[in-house]
Length: 323
Image (cartoon, rainbow, N blue to C red; front, side, top):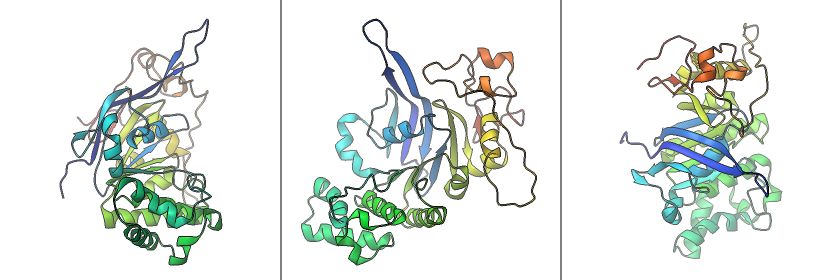
């Protein structure tokens, strides 16, 4: 297997002009402010952070729903350009958070699954139906489900249908935007195990968007921690979870429940409010909430340093960076 990434992002940014009017200028909201990452076949890159950190905006750019303001995306080494989206979208598909809201309630499941093939391929009706039925079986659903409507299924079954639809065009990259957060805990486990099984069978590359670190610990190979549009920590999952370098990552991990009765755990409570993305403070964006803040933090913006595990912090938890 080649070590070349299926998808690569360099300096990826997405800005929005917000407000403005007769006597006011619009302001710029930097939802994603310079992100670099690679996604490899058979591997999962997880992106975590609080609501509003830019995770879902990143997902929409990778899925070619929104155009980056700056920076570049490549797919199999070729630039992803807006004029090529129609051809490239078959290689990148997305599974949304709400499995019911993403399915047309007026269409039967078979029609929902066959629709991507009808739009993007020249397969006959018989071939489309055969592939849809095969995909139902692959995600653990029965043949009789083909002619039913979305409202006749549980949340977990609907998410299986959404996953099946995303796989109909044989994509290389699957963007999973909070794919289990709307499901019961027991159902989450079944869906996650299904995703891991499909990844192993089909050698899919996953971009997994989540705020739940316990889920990320189960599925990820590499992790990016985002804060107000920027990556504040990045590295292999084991290193990020076992030895977090950025104070924000350490605070997030301290709030994650652990199945170890009686084990001592330091709970870090962040003080202050999350700054407005329209008015991000100078220097390190995390400085107003950080217990390690120094004057330098308020004056300069730290860059992400360290390979393969790095953090954007002048005073990292272990005090040094492996260069």
